[in-house]
Length: 357
Ligand SMILES: Cc1cc2nc3c(=O)[nH]c(=O)nc-3n(C[C@H](O)[C@H](O)[C@H](O)COP(=O)(O)O)c2cc1C
Image 1 (cartoon, rainbow, N blue to C red):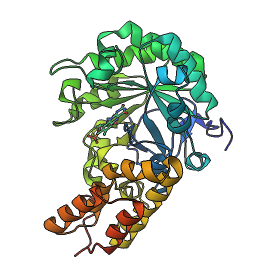
Image 2: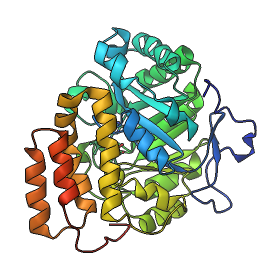
Image 3: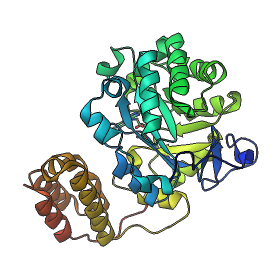
């Protein structure tokens, strides 16, 4: 698919869900780019490569955002970053746009990195202003940008200028409990830096990924921001996701941990299926992932890389507790992909599992 193929010809569907009730399977327009539905894959560091994004798209995700990529690594041409993290598979773009997430703190570096991302074929750029990890924050990037709004605006402008693509920003609501500086920054990013949408994770950065997200803050941003708001945080169960989508008025939902090893959740949310995967589907899906990882990383690296994926798929097999932990342990020491696959294929599931677990 050629660059720009997702440019919207009909912009009447633009904007958030506010006003009339919107369904998750309705198309919308983000910065002039058509997104076929409102169920998106969140950026996931160390996970959200081309084949994880493609998997989400195969099951119906309207857009998938890459794992965060260092603007510095792109600027300096780091080989693995360029070959592996900026790899976009053409099939990804058959199902909807691809967004690459960048992090960094230097606007000049960001401008150049954004141009490179556009040349790599991305439809959109997302900027990470929510990562709470000290290694990222101590450089002034990620959630540290909540305390440095002028730099945040300069980075967003630089990404737009460098790429010519729509730019979105993923934000936390604040850095520490009671801090809502993320909401003020969201407004400035849209009005002063031309950002097309805000993805809000309504947990403060100091909470990392634990605790209850404050969905009322998302609803408040939806009411006040003149741009679509994308909701992320705590989205694991289809009924709950539909409820918070409706309650907040968000333009879209962005699945993160709830989608790990569970691409069927995308299908359920866009109305493509209602039943749970049976064990043979789970094994076949992991097989597909293994094939992609082998092609992407080679046999040896894929074997190590996929160790973090195995527990997600074991969870979908609904095995009795003892069997599941034994299988997880065996998988962690499987000498290669062939052994891991054989272990999976021989696992027996006692009963179909609930779809939204
Ligand atoms: C393993 C992991 C990696 C993540 N990597 C990123 C990332 O690269 N960029 C980002 O903006 N957020 C990242 N996040 C945050 C998620 O995108 C998401 O906003 C967060 O997990 C909240 O959603 P959840 O509670 O449904 O998991 C990551 C989260 C996890 C658990």
